[in-house]
Length: 406
Ligand code: SR1
Ligand code: MG
Image (cartoon, helix red, strand yellow):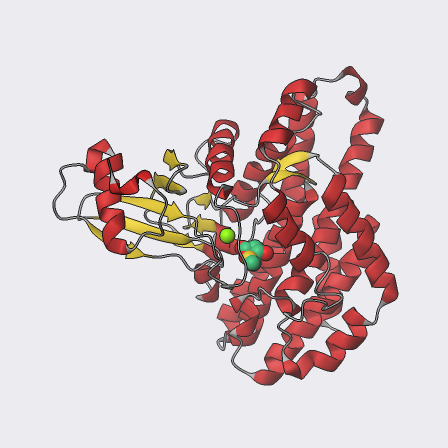
């Protein structure tokens, strides 16, 4: 009999005992300490460590951290453990290694990403990551294209779709990303009062926008295109100047490729907005904002280049080998990318789960301006999604919005 034979939500002292019991390498270590280090909306993340070693335990609670009223099945850790193993096979070195998934305690034990910092935290300190565009585009091209019907045996792919059916986490996204920011039916949007009238006019009252969002929502519900991360924002990345780790894929399921790519693009513009509003030194501001803007266009262009080359090397279905079909397929991925870049931008500005990049802008007027720009840019992405085909298209749209009188 063990204390860990039945589920309970662990405290720091329990986690030390848990690691000693479950991980051989830690069994006899006396001086282990533990600290809860999670700052996400959903789970509890513990670091167990001494001077030589450290390891991470992520435990799913029945209630979400962001809201005691929201509950979720604790099975989400299984999905996370399984996708991390697949992603490590497809894109070696970009995800932490999984040591154990314990379905009873709903705990995932994994590699500590030592020497890396949560990317959003680093971006809020206006750190620059020169290798990010290259590495994240590599990660996305490999993990996304190689899990599609273009490459996989179709029977194996359907088994994967079943394994990664993730209804409760998708339900969160369907409400928080694809619905509530446009119609606040659950009354849990967080809109900065300084932009309330603007949000009313540009988001709640814009029927054309609602129709495009509805089309995108149906695509999210039905397009089982690739095994996507499902929540690929800068809080799901640990990074340093040399290396990028992607983690926290509990929202993973078979969905549109553009969902991951669009999330990254939107979040890099949040970083730009924070730098533009918060950095006082002119040269430093230019350096950081230029890097963030260049990263957006490079991520898109590098992703496209890598995706096309992987497609040509790995396409397996005879009907998908034609150049004209490939071009059509990629144009749908690019359209979805722009749509999701818009949706993520809007929901992180006015929805339930805001981002610190915007909420920590200290000057009220600057914050309102940043939020209005994000919304106007997002509407461009959504209402003209077919036009966003290259990094330059994103760069042009951003510069247009930055020069608007809002
Ligand atoms: C209720 S959870 C809110 C958000 O946090 C997660 O990271 C996802 O982005 C989700 O939408
Ligand atoms: Mg998360």
